[in-house]
Image (spheres, rainbow over the protein chains, first blue to last red):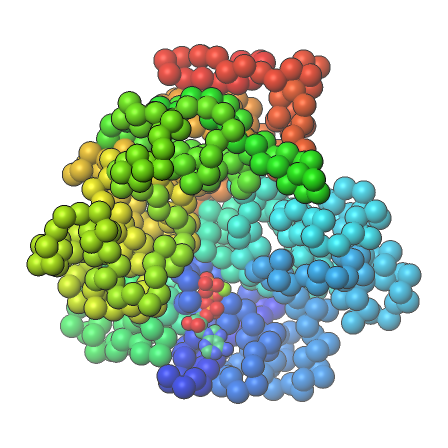
Length: 310
Length: 318
Ligand SMILES: Nc1ncnc2c1ncn2[C@@H]1O[C@H](COP(=O)(O)OP(=O)(O)OP(=O)(O)O)[C@@H](O)[C@H]1O
Ligand code: SF4
Ligand SMILES: [Mg+2]
């Protein structure tokens, strides 16, 4: 069953240079306990999509469409109602633990605070819960480490703290934005294993550049390009039967898969190309691609592609 | 082209300079003309310090660096200045290597002006040549760095480097801030340049997939020491050091694709953290994370010995 359904979502930022169409016409869904990977290159709008779901965006942001969570349209509920959903129902694990953790508060207190935002626990019980969370993310001697400050933790350990914090109120949906960025590969694999384990009963939107991490963790993968999804399908389909020229180009450019670059670069989100947004870089471009914007088409069971050529 | 022997750097830090960080400890390797050595290891293991020592941007505590037969450590300032153009370094972040107030054309022309004997017209001509070598067009050179993408700026950095006509390039994570499709552009360019100009590379990276396609030989570094060095194929197919095996396992498991394809890889998933260079474990530096550790590993630092042609491993149990 769908836990989250996004229908025709647009998130636009008015700026002095023009309207930044960071998320533009996104349709997707995440079912219960599913891990859904969102892959794309820098600036394509992945984080904005993640933040749109929990409505953590500046106030002049223009949002249109629907985000249906457990039958409720999150774009229509009040801010007070939204606050209850954040953390408790939908939690975010952020991209950068170094800037997201408060340097002057102990790690245990920070997690306890996050818990007390949503659960009526006294300080002592919240602290106990925080220690349990640290233990759940395999931090050695958790009751002792709870009293330490973030700078006393290594990069990998900080990431564990971020995971503990995100999961503290037992949310049904976790949005994880680059949870393995900047980690060494021997630590990265530990975090991947940990996340797989602690989110097994939860739905997750995993935002990442790292197709390796996504293929290890996800059930389905979507490729995002210039504010929209261009393809999504099961992990196996994406790797064995990629259909969109961008997906194919992305796979071919990986060092282990040929290192064939995609010519050119991603367009500005203020000045998107007419027709297919990928057409200036596409080797299959046809006349229609320059004029019409391709829609999302289901090519095969659950395999969706936005391309006239596919 | 480059011979490094017993290269060592201790930094002292903290109050009264009491704490000493053994950032690089007895590192030896060679790089042939036109060849690439990949230097891999985790953050803080000393990779970048090795690069900076070779360039003599910092002074080594001990060791020898021979560049084209010349002992770099013995050179005085002036001699060093004369030889520097032949060795160039490129970093992860192109923005830190380019002056934001300088147009691209001026950035590329600068080294020609400082080090060459070209006339103004010749320099202009040469800038256009260099721009073409790195795959940019004349339309780019009247812009400023902020008007170009990260990948384009990295090309500008390469053009600047090529203006010096170097023999050796030390590339320190040159593509780790770039998207994969752009990374592929830069890595291909670096390979083409190597072929055309017979360049030698020291390619520093934490990404084994990238090193695999760039390097002829690979050196694996752990807490300031080389634990294994060998031909790229030998490292990937018959790694002997437990740390190298663990790196390969993690990298293989995290390779994009379905099925983990790691069945043939020997290593394990390491427990624990990358230790800090401030308190380096006694004996074998890897012993705390090593699945095979025995008593001798706690007390005695293993010597490096040859297990195959040009394949060296520093472990008591290979
Ligand atoms: N508040 C804002 N106002 C204006 N533009 C914004 C704002 N927030 C984000 N953007 C722009 O929206 C685009 C998408 O940004 P986003 O952070 O979602 O990218 P991303 O895909 O997460 O990239 P990365 O992989 O680098 O994290 C970018 O061009 C960014 O500059
Ligand atoms: S719609 Fe046309 S331009 Fe766009 S990806 Fe498909 S073939 Fe290429
Ligand atoms: Mg982001």
